[in-house]
Image 1 (spheres, helix red, strand yellow):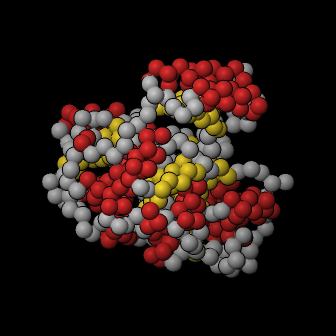
Image 2 (cartoon, rainbow, N blue to C red; image 1 turned 135 degrees about the horizontal axis):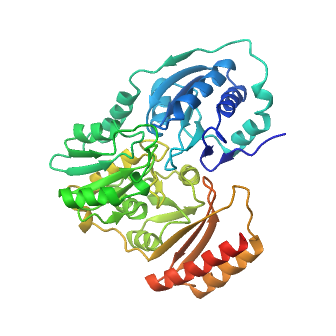
Image 3 (cartoon, rainbow, N blue to C red; image 1 turned 120 degrees about the vertical axis):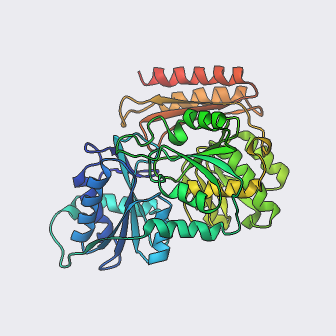
Length: 439
């Protein structure tokens, strides 16, 4: 009997309970047995969680037991996976990370030979056969080796993409979330000439994302404001997303950063197809700004994989999410927090982030309602009725979105309205309905 394992960003859950060594072993075997190759070459990288080494060993064992050869890349940001696939000719890559989640969680996500995350159909095929793939041996046993120089390879790719960018005179603070960017982010900024203050770069296995990184910006905001830095960037645990603060310590979110990048690329004739892809969470103000700039917008479901699908379908180069996933296809087919930060600096051309607003945001309120467990269900009809009623009240002035998270046991309630007061009122009513329906 098959199990539903994959969410919007791989398999994710509590390490040692839901994401176990046995599961990692089974996934490693299954992904190789689903491959058309007899002896695929696989890259395995991870973030800094204490459970990462255990899962790395189990995955490598599973891949090797099915005949695959494994290169262990150690701690590297998620976007290094597709770049190293292309650079070294790997057939697949596995990233062990739970992104912005606390250290107690971990996850496993796969990239194919094309550098893209596996399709929903391929993930479903792995699920259909995962149990049978854990039994028995294979005629060939693969080898497991260390990959030396992976971090330097990743930095070299960043240097190549931003070879024309000089950060001389730029004073930047970087919050690396005690995660996968803790070494490579300060290094590339320094190589490009910036004065770098690196925060949260002492991972101990348990402090990843703990009151730091792109989900906890207060520390970075204070450091930038009090330290007189020009701006700051915060990455998440696996380095595929980034948010910024200006010199006053004010948040600049993914929508604003993406708008700045889109207009910059459009003005220089580098915005392939003349469009940008975003998700349903993107602020209404972004759409207004893009219309004024003559840039087409495609809207997708939440998740960088869906943004990526839209870009590939249209032949576009730029897309992203409010949470800070920004994809520039000309560099890597994945969100890359470091590359996104450098793209923002490229777009600023030495200017002040505080003074270069590319869009006016509508007030937005997002509340996460925790589910009692991952299998909890809402009364869909009742929820749709409540959303429809609130949407009608905001017709033409704002919008409402209620959705279940694909990575955490949460229901996300998001409201945009012309005023903060109305936004909060509508959001409070919807949150109360969600909580009532959950009992």
